[in-house]
Image: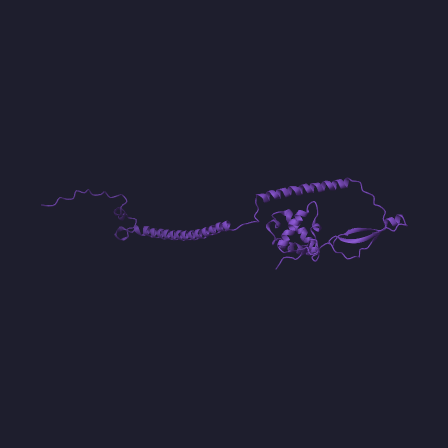
Length: 274
C-alpha cells in the first residue's frame, strides 16, 4: 500500500525572495542571475569593518575610563585620609573672618579720626614762633631712621644776657630717598621673606601684611641696630599689640633675634635662615 502524501501546505513565496530577484534583468551577465548580491555584500563588508573599528574604539575608551577611575578613586582616598590625619592650625575659621571684619572696622574708624584731627588742625590758627637764637650742628653721626641733630639754643641768654641757660632741642632730618633699583630690590626681598611667614601675613590680612612690611623696612634701614617694641609703634594704625604679633612671627621664623641681656628686650635682625 502506497504511503499517504504529506499534508503540509506549501509556504507562499515572498515578493522579495531571492528567486524573484534572481530573475531580475538588472544584471543579465551575472552567473545564475545572482549578480545583485555582489554590491550588497561589498557594502555589508564595509559596514562590518566600520562597526568593528567603532567597537574597538569603545573598548579602548572603556579601558581608559577604568584606569582613570582607579587612579581618581585612589587620589580621593588619599585626600580623605590626609584630611582625617592632618591638622591645619593656620586655616581660617569663622572666628578669623569675624576678627578680620572687626579689624577692618577699627582701621576705618581710626582713619576717620585721623582725617577729623587733620581738619581740626587745619582750622586751628597758627601759633607764632617764639624768638630763639639757634645753632645747628648737622655734621653729627646718625644712628636711627629719624636722625637727630642737636641744636643748642640760648633763648634765655638772648632775652637776658645775664642768664646762661641753654636748651637742647631735637630736630628730625628726613632719611635719604631710595632709588628705583633699590626700591625694586627691597620689594623682591620683602616678598621672599613674607613667603616664609604664616598665611595671614602673606595677603590673607592686607593690614597685617602692611604692618609687617613697615617693620621690615625699619630693620632694613638699620640692620645692625637693636630696637624695642616702642620703636615700631605708629598710632593709631600700628599699635603695640599688632607690633607684638608681628614680632612673635618673626622670632618664631628666626628672622629676628630677641635679646634681653641688657635688662630691656631688644630685637635684632637676622634675616631668613639658610
